[in-house]
Amino acid sequence: MAMKIVLAYSGGLDTSVIIPWLKENYEGCEVIAVCGNVGQGDETDGLEEKALKTGASKLYIEDLSDMYVNDFIMPTLKAGAVYEEYLLGTSTARPCIAQRLVEIALKENADAICHGCTGKGNDQVRFELTIQHFAPGMKVIAPWREWELTSREDEIDYAEQRGIPLKISRETNYSKDKNLWHLSHEGLDLEDPANEPTYEKPGFLEMCVSPMQAPDKPTYITLDFEQGVPVKLDGQAMTPKEIILKLNEVGGANGIGIQDIVENRLVGMKSRGVYETPGGAILYKAHGLLESICLDRMTAHKKQELSLTFAQLVYNGQWFTPLREALSAFVDKTQETVTGTVRLKLYKGNMIPAGLESPYSLYSESMATFGESDYNQKDAEGFINLYGLPIRVKAMMDQQRAKQ
Image (cartoon, rainbow, N blue to C red; front, top):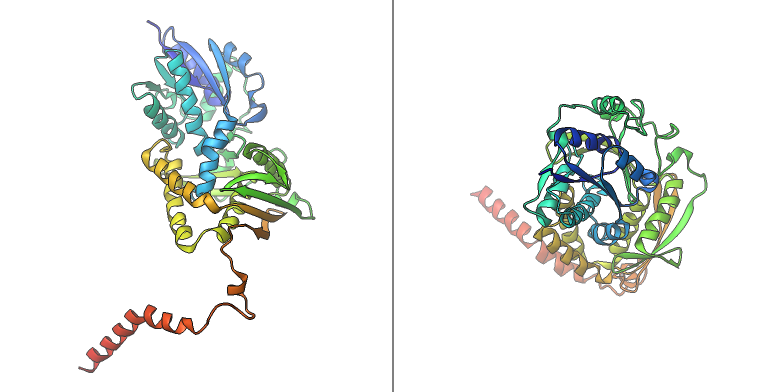
């Protein structure tokens, strides 16, 4: 009996080639394409026609944008999770898409799920660990680990030979991933870390302008948070998704959120990429500033430690694990008082703090002031004597031993 295969489909180079490849290599198979819309915009235009023309029996386009923001981005933002400066745009999207893939595969009684991730990258792990969580017995087909194609140039040749339309050429063949949180660029000249990205070249940046091309006048914004979640922008109540989309516009226009990173992939190699995350960068900055006045020292420091673990779990595809869920429970507890207003000045790629307020602020001006204070400075003498006691005792004993 012919196989029924559910394919994670974007209409990009990899998945455009995969449909005919599956038809050629899995005789008589039916390919059901699934596009998880996590905010990639016009990339979904004309997708159904393209999928059907290249051999798919049907295409699901699933709007996952609210789920992506509420169930994946917000927990990661509240955790302050950053992987080697990377704000985890692709890492958070993959388990969201893969979860829906499995749901459709089970509904369709599919025999296998297929993805277009390379055998070098992190996404293969993120997809497959999610599949293992929701459907542990499901077969996974990963063409990049099976076929004889060895490069994106080979894929373009394969597509051209079969008349598959592509939106890219060999000259613009960056590997890109776009959603409402970010846009990543890899490949071509970026593969050599010695090369400066062509930020000023028309068409390279899509969500942002180069800081050099940003306005000469700063833009002020205010963000309101409730228990770590953004709820207002410039005083107007909005959903987190609406805030992200608006901040993408405002931040992008001011050159905010452009990162050039060499990161350590899960498989062990280093990879260089350019990321555009304008709204995300602003939210991380504002959230961190608000925490600086709302969290006590011990909680803040422990949260910083655990945020690295959280980021590693997300980056490594381990979203659906007991540890990630436990860390999110810890994070949610820390966010109970992270409520207030943050004002930022955006200027040529910079996010400059311009004021913080919170009803739960732990900042006491009467204690911290250089003027007349509620703090009794004489208390410090006894504290220092006790705090330094081990140091003083060791020094005394060392001196006694030296005399003997």
